[in-house]
Length: 628
Ligand code: AGP
Image (tube, rainbow, N blue to C red; front, side, top):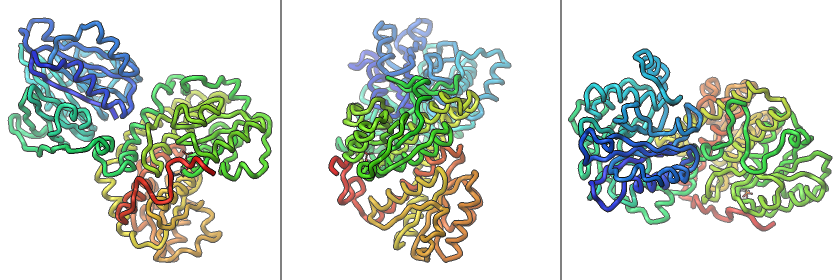
């Protein structure tokens, strides 16, 4: 998710606007981004002075690249501005596509988080009026729309309101402008969060309260449809669809988080924070790795050459627990996309089964911590038997990454909750990217299909964010409550979603201590069907695709025996069969595990919370099992 900051400081105050904006963006880096920028202006100079015009600095890559540009002092002396960290959805990561955007008049700078769904229609309208666009982004279309009205009216708040009434999509947006010596700083929200606050010597806004805390603990969260006009010490909140000048009241919240709560960003548990962090993790996990034009990917550091990848004849995946479930998904992806045979073994079993390693075998370890004793030992054995080694791991410098010849880091950030969530989805992303790379190197995926796979991945994030709203989470909590007295749970899935059934069962049992079992849906009739009764709830994962009708028959079998069904996924027929339904947006079959696992994570979280369990530190469990 992109990060937005904005501030207006009294001229001659103690703080420098570029420092305030950069520091604010730094607190938002965790959200994942591919470029950043700031736009500032000075308010105490007459309208014709060049300093009253907006000045912009933008850079692709890390924040440090932007700070390097600012060293020339060209943006010094300003006292109002906006800043942004960008996660690309429309237009590849580049300086020119980075925010802020202007309309070419240098009277405004606009930053935006979200998607303008009707941007192409609006772009064509503006181009028909002679507007020339400098970037590929949907955000520039919004900027030009605002700029067109601003140039006619000189009223930035009215211009933003007018533009947003034309927009379909979701957004958090902030814009700073100056015309005829009048400066305005305005923001609005429809979807992604925005919070604002007045300061002794100014006013400030941001996507995340963490960016405000260094300045104040008294903040106001805008709600959907709000817009706010900020001046030093004064904020007016109005409605986008309301009358100009008609203000509305919003509660001021005092944030009294301690350091740990701040690190939980206000969530009651690390696990919930990490579940909600997954869209940002997606951003970080693919940052700088996509090559959309070639329909390929490139891993940072010592990547594989295509010749080396072509030398791989078999993949042996070794892992434990949740990481093993990621390994089973990886197997479906690599066999399905790169057509290489894959075996997946519990690391703890592999060590003692006298394995046979054929020439050209790649041993692939998957591990969040990189310190799991069984995984380390199994990988050492595989190397001794002649396998090449590689890891998918979250901790750079861990024993595993030092032991392996090559590593794909998952960039999930520190995972505190013992029950793995964001690290798991990050492992799935790494596996998807590796299968794509393998397939492109071996020619089993052509450029067209590679581009399609990348486009599907780049549009996954808004779909993930649909699953991570308070409303969606509350709906899952209500379902968990209805099944709180079940004597046990069966999770069924098929194909690439079979390991998601295993993962959903593991999540539930490890934090709520209730018995839960994951099973291949096609196997249910070979035994587990004997368990079916009203006291046993069955969660069935089903997405539209080649096994959907087979999974539906498993649902019918459960229903025929009086077993309650929770239907999870995008298959409408399955949803008609379920007493409870957890809807999931459609995506490609290969990416469906990344979406289907999220409601199962939320289900286990709420079930355990309703039972009063210790969610972040479940009994008997350690975050990393460094002993046998
Ligand atoms: C997952 O929720 C558990 N905490 C556990 O199964 C974990 O996945 C397993 O111990 C492997 O840990 P690793 O990924 O750090 O190797």
